[in-house]
Image (cartoon, rainbow, N blue to C red):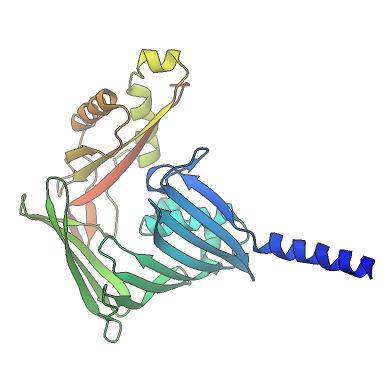
Length: 282
């Protein structure tokens, strides 16, 4: 009887372990895993033939996904990076073609977007307003809302056609212009993003006192790439190294034009967030 009880206890512990959640914290925008507790968190739970993941920002649930044909938390992070960055080709991995996933996203205006990812395509099942009204009819519809930011009012207009996200526009009232948040070809430097990034970081003079103290830093600069490829409207999204961020923005503002983003065969204005990591080797 004791032996049976011990066996039962062991099996129960194994069961609990299999159901235990893994928790990871990340730097801004889930760009990279962090060794410290941050406002950007993911919880993972292994399920049959896959992983269930929740993504939180400042303790608010922003994404849930049941991902099949995936075997590790690292692969989960790679897939979500691909998904969160609107399927940018430089984030693509061949094994994504085998993945199927049910994904729920809660946006900044409390709309709930439910979609199914399969065969490297993301199709929307429904898009619910904060009052739980589905705006899609036969897979098509328009999601519109306004957000008041610190120095700007932005109107968002997302168009769905045949269950696919067709366009995602941001209308800036103060500048009377339109930014395309969803594009067919993303804006990139002429030398390629990877080469640009390496050359740019190496050209910056890392603050001597921080280098002396052995401190590394990462900053995030948001900017707009206009229809001609000019970099404009710089904004520091991090607030840890104000002077250094200003120097970085000043350097970026003097760079040559990029290749502008393309949507529906036309050059369009788009927004870009550049994470700049300065480590002690630079």
